[in-house]
Amino acid sequence: MRTDLRSFEKSNCMQNQDQESRNVQRSAKKDLFEAPDYFLVDELLSEEHKLIRDTVRTWVKKELSPIIEDFAQRAEFPKHLIPELARLGAFGPTIPPQYGGAGLDYISYGLIMQEIERGDSGIRSTASVQGSLVMYPIYAYGSEDQKLNYLPKLASGELLGCFGLTESDHGSDPASMITNIKDMGSHYLLNGSKMWISNSPHADMAIVWAKDEQGTVKGLIVEKGMEGFSAPEIHGKWSLRASATGELVFHNVKVPKENLLPNISGIKGPLGCLNQARYGIAWGALGAAMDCYDTALRYSKERIQFGKPIAGFQLQQKKLAEMITEITKAQLLVWRLGELKNKGLASPAQISMAKRNSVETAIHVAREARQILGGMGITGEYPIMRHMMNLESVVTYEGTHDIHLLITGMDITGLNAFQ
Ligand SMILES: Cc1cc2nc3c(=O)[nH]c(=O)nc-3n(C[C@H](O)[C@H](O)[C@H](O)COP(=O)(O)OP(=O)(O)OC[C@H]3O[C@@H](n4cnc5c(N)ncnc54)[C@H](O)[C@@H]3O)c2cc1C
Image 1: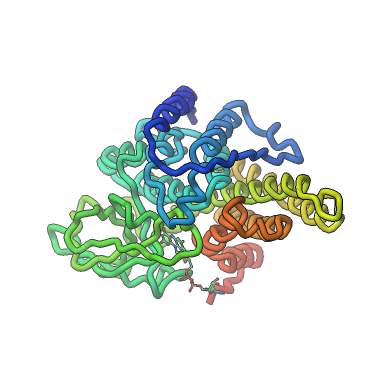
Image 2: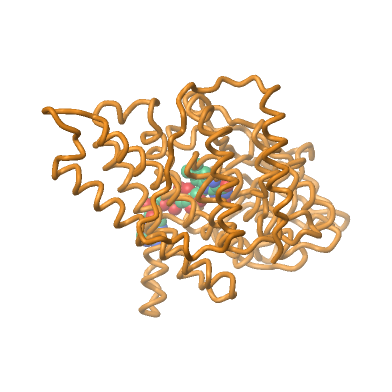
């Protein structure tokens, strides 16, 4: 594990300079976020963790919060943030420095995801896909040439990637996919399509999971510009509006043999990547929950009805007290999960439980917070409705709420209730 703290400090300075020349609409509202820490979880973090967390928090306040509502309202991906996310170390935080990663531990990775999702789940999704679903499979399953060729460019944001597993008829059951490759001797011929792919309309490359002639799932690096490959955008989403989602369509795409990930076969390949990403979501969703709680707490102390702040009414206190209780429980769970992950002891079932719990907590907190704000809660003046809509994707992707429950059920009973 290694932390290049200087790069974090340098990044702040560069961001300020870049900001001068940027021409995006910024909100006049100030991001007043104060992180809840009811059980002094900060004491469980190292100085390095806190520095990383605070650096990303500051960036979110200065660069993401002022623009995100506008981009989400317009359903536009703020692509200009990619180099900044890269400078923050958000792409592949745990990938070793020799491949361009930040070489951080898993608690640092979790904290980065928490802070980015405190800003917006769509931007966290971009970082999660790039780090956990594109860089991780190349790092874990790729050849040395593939690692040296792609990872530094992905870490620096020079390349943006996406991850193609889901198909229109094969979502929770990806092993039944029909996208396929045929060995043509000099290359593979790729046919099929993928659906609901984050980043795909803007991606320079895709990690694509397809079955070979024996029906074994294989991973391939497919690059933009290959003949027969297109990535049309899916429009009309009410969730993750600041994140671009699309399809991947393959019509007789000739993929060079050296683009196959050589060190993995079978559905365990994509599932291994999803484990990495789900771990990040377990932390990330809590960021959204914290933002909703903090917004509702502040609003309830300022909003006067019947001659006193609504925070003074028992019904509102019940909501706030339950929110902070659930957030605190989830904070402790993900911190412990991070400790286990650092030791290589976190099981996929533990990650499933944490992802499911954090997202459920966040959705519940967002809905309660929305009520505390009354009519203002549905507007873009506050981040709550955006978080709430975003979380409707987060609860579905990377394994639905039901699927994660079934994983826990199978883990504790030894019985498979999927089929
Ligand atoms: C915004 C967004 C971004 C996404 N990004 C990506 C991406 O980058 N890459 C990618 O590959 N995929 C991505 N996905 C796809 C996502 O992972 C799938 O939507 C998810 O796996 C669920 O598949 P599905 O939508 O087909 O739902 P289905 O699998 O059809 O499920 C529908 C319902 O049935 C339930 N269900 C299914 N099977 C069972 C069972 N055995 N027992 C009980 N209930 C069951 C589910 O829980 C769910 O409630 C994204 C999705 C969204 C919405």
